[in-house]
Amino acid sequence: SEVKKAYETLSDPQKKSMYDMTGNASDGPGGFPGGGPGGFNPFANAGAGGQNPFANMGGQGGQNPFAGMGGQGGNQGMNFSDFEEMFAKMSGAKGQEKAKKPQGPEPGADVHFKLRLSFLEAVNGASKEISYNTLRKCTACSGSGAKDNQEKAKCPHCNGRGKKVMATGFFHMQQDCQHCEGTGSTAKSTCTQCTGKGVIKDRAVQTLPVPKGVDNRERLKITGKGECGVRNGPPGNLYVEITVDEHPVFHRDGVDIHMVAPITLSQAVLGGPIRIPTLVGEVETKVPAGTQQGDKVVIRGRGVHRPTQQKTGDFYIHFSVMLPKDLTEKQKAAVAQFAEDEK
Ligand SMILES: [Zn+2]
Ligand SMILES: [Zn+2]
Ligand SMILES: [Zn+2]
Image 1 (cartoon, helix red, strand yellow):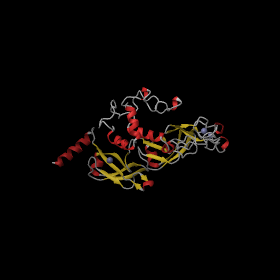
Image 2: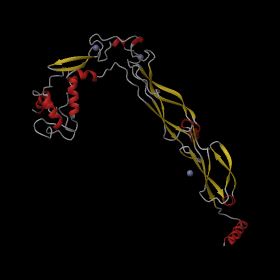
Image 3: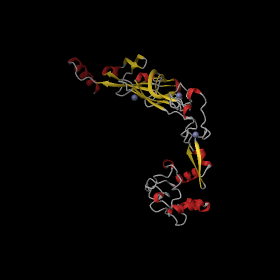
Image 4: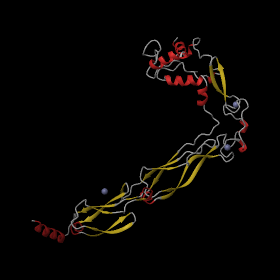
């Protein structure tokens, strides 16, 4: 059968390298029939029975790595590298390194928190109290997952490895030790508060100093403030994703601030003093005589101050001339007089 051919081919190193290149040792390119777009599956017929070299390997049904594979079509099939990896795992030393060790420390997950700030909170910096679901270290076992904070008792059946090696022909297969369920430690040494994980679900509350000048869609990283690692693994990070509300007057572009200041016809024509709101309160500045619609003045250094980037922005005032709509008779006469002089 095809399976038998694959098996025989892989037992022969020279043929195996041919197999790597073409996908099929003897028939040239094309691969196994029925391979489909997901790559060929050398175990596609594994359910067939007598000719399957892996059929009797599992021992306990659930432990058989090939159980249930027969029904998979081409799309779901393993590709060749999956097969090679599995083959390497089954054949010994390499597999031991790859086998997971459930009793070891594991890094904590990152926490992502969305923080909404007002425009001026972002400009001026703020101290925000935030709370989020996380995992904290189990105090009962100091994060070790072991009972009474003692050294974990080694499982005597697997000498603490959590694995047993089974030999079937020239295949060596690892199985979880039944006595310790693969943990390598005896059940009674497990901390009952955290069921051996060393971490407990918790609600974290902390005060977050938001630095001056943060901007919309920026992200703060607070190292080590994510979830605690399992069994004293390293903690994850806290990422705070910032959203900044719009301001009715100020518009921000990086560290620069822009605003539109309405002025009257006479202010535009004659110029004069004007009071302008800025980030630090009102200031008096000047409308230049002959200001046109959209003309701007810049106040240097009055934009956003970002100490962390050593940047200070500028403050842009865009003038918008409000032409009068309802004139008194006297004003009309004055404009008419003005029109005479324009000719
Ligand atoms: Zn064991
Ligand atoms: Zn614990
Ligand atoms: Zn502008």
